[in-house]
Image 1 (cartoon, helix red, strand yellow):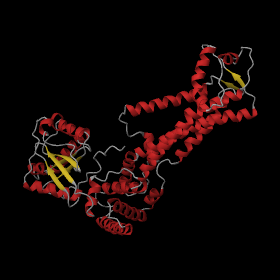
Image 2 (tube, rainbow, N blue to C red):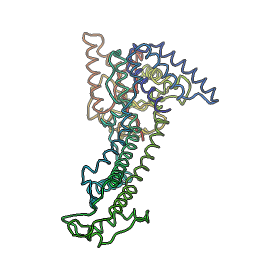
Image 3 (cartoon, rainbow, N blue to C red):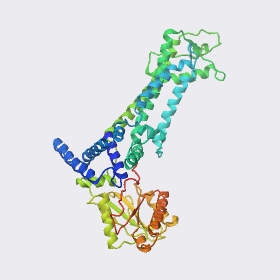
Image 4 (cartoon, rainbow, N blue to C red):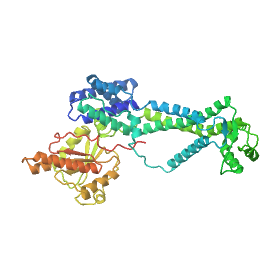
Length: 491
């Protein structure tokens, strides 16, 4: 799916996930959107003589829901129409860079060509340093830091949630802005790289244009001066600097040591031939800055175009797998559950399957792993479990709410799993045993809430989203996995 379709799908996912009580989108709204999307996707597939795909279904369903919410809430309709991100900056950066490069004559003397011009030498040196850095980055890859405020702003623009939105809808929009900033980061990086390369090329072109434009109306005085360099050293430096230009463009004349000595300011020699040095500097900037940057910009633009046309949205996440189940697309979702110091009886096992069906689709399956013993080293407890097994939709650790979280046991177990399960782990906190133990005595509900808050804070500290469930009453607590699990790294 392309960028626009992915944006709509992520927006609808965030709204449905936030609207737990179904106050914004009722059950009838969701069922109608699913049914209509299934029919529209079938017609679309029939016209193109292809099979119904999950992409077509999600696209049609997202459009149906967004249309309905826009009709009900004008503020949401205005938000949908708003252009995402800061699109104007992509074209503005190269233009501003060109004007800045053209203004270089305000930095140096506009009536002379300095052979050791600091602005021109800095342009070349900086770009060569950038190329070296990119080469090192490619050879020695490093993990990129995510969540940059600049990338966030470029991806979503003004991150404020529109006013006059219902509470659940406002929460959904806020979650969407956070999700989209992460998901679109590779695309934003590619666009930013393209603009930076074009800006560097534009800056150099501006400097070249400035050299020639001033030369049309001004007689350049050509020469050089230095406190620490002598004529031989300057001749060596300029010979290396202009070597690529003189090899590529044979019509450019070289220069001798005597000429360099003669061009030293204050030497009393004849200072002429400024056009030759303008051509040498222009050709050097063209070869070392403009052309390489344009090539890099083309590659970055091609990557951005590919990501825009085929946005890398992970459709194996629980939310999408549940919807795919409604049209029979893809393999059934698989919930892998690893109990910790907790053995399930037959009734709770049935409740686990019911939770999987309601959360991941009616065809979802449960893979219940052997219980990890209390205090047992995670490596030993999980020796027979392939943590990076393919086909697993969600990996969840099952704790009993009756237990008290301990950093050296429960925390160590979560940390071990979080580092080895590709998409991270979720935590299921079964309250059924705790509720049975405390009974209906006064304050029992407050004790359950207090214990739940303690576990949630504990799991959050260990980087795992926690969900309270009741395996004896699966319908008591609606379960949504997608909002808290780690997203796969996009490249």
